[in-house]
Amino acid sequence: MSGYFAPAPMTHSDFSDEFPLDHGLIYLNHAAVSPWPRRTAVAVQQFAEENMRQGARHYTRWLETEVHLREQCRSLLNAPSADDIALLKNTSEALSVVAHGLAWRTGDNVVISDQEFPSNRIVWQSLQEDGVETRCVDLTRGASPEQALVACMDKHTRLLAVSSVQYASGLRLDLDRLGTLCRDRGVLFCVDAIQSLGALPLDVQACGADFVMADGHKWLLGPEGCAVFYVRSQVRERLRLRQYGWHMVEDHLDFSRQDWQVAASARRFECGSPNMVGIHALSASLALLAEVGMEAVAARVLANSAYLMEALSELPDIEILTPRQSGRYAGIVTFRHQRVDPADLHRRLLARNVICAQRGSGVRFSPHFYITRMQLETAVAAVEEALRTS
Image (cartoon, rainbow, N blue to C red; front, top):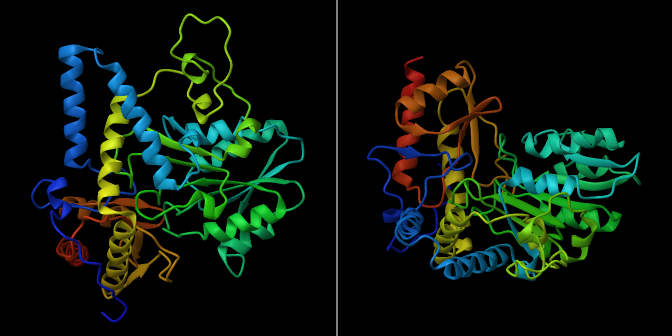
């Protein structure tokens, strides 16, 4: 296959022992919900065992894990400080903190793309009652997706909200370029990074993002219910708080204080008790990604996608919907057959133990770094076999 490039070799311990999936299962659904690494399951089991036997006797040690997770997230994003990191429930909550925290004026507008997951569309459309327009941009109507987005900006544009990678097509946006365009126009830049964080490096300082959010249960290999939320320190005060509680104040462990003030750090966006189970789990998962190294993870993810696009395109009547140009794809490969209904093909693949998703107008494969070449070959063979039965 002429365009295929081999993934960078990985030394073993090789991390396959971290993913003891059932025999014969090909897991290509990390853009939906990832399986946990072994160490993450062990961390949760140990946490549960300790809680069962000792309750919160060692709560101060739990708090140390929380602090450590903030630092892990800071490092993953290259944020200036762990104070810029909040630990929220999910991406939608973080988007809502931004959307309903900013002081909008009638006539303001928000620019998004026409390919966004509902979480990054509905939240902005909910501002309509405040006189805020949501401009949904056709990304194909420009020399590049970035140009299409900026062409819809005007003097009333307050914020650009994009997914780093589009959930259905797998289109990867140039965040550095978008960040520069936003800075030049005085527009806030909000990035839903759920389909890239954990698969590709993301530098919030390099791209100039004001807000970045991502759930833990996709490429970060963690649990649902625990998400990272980055807020650039210079814009933190611009978000009006809509939730209040004991955890979001300074001196939050001094429960007898009657006077209080909002925490200076991004902890101000965490109103109540932390999700300690999720924190322990996500910390374990991020430790694995750090051990592998994000550059190595990205090389494997991109190589896996490149192989799939090449191999699937050689099957008769298969169309690759994901952009194949370098820099325009990440971990998602979406494809369709010219005559077989995507829902039908998806069912046939599930029956052959290829775990994937139906998204947009095609079938979506999303392999992480640990998925082997042999497993990818098996998945392509399963597509071929499934089509023969049509």
